[in-house]
Amino acid sequence: MGKKNFVLFLFETMVQLWSLFLFLLIIYKYFFGTSFSFITITRPEFYLTGLVSLVSTIVLYFVRSRK
Image (tube, rainbow, N blue to C red):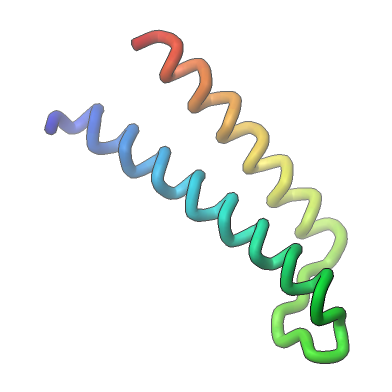
């Protein structure tokens, strides 16, 4: 595996894991509410992570379409 392929693989894996983490966080907050929450995420942090996920997904789409 070349250096470029390794970086792409690492980037894809991190984007997928981050998306899974956000999904689980939203599900946790929805079912358990804020009273039992040990994870706090404010509105600006939520929007920032959503923006980062969106940009990462778009970058991955264009990188994959160039192959």
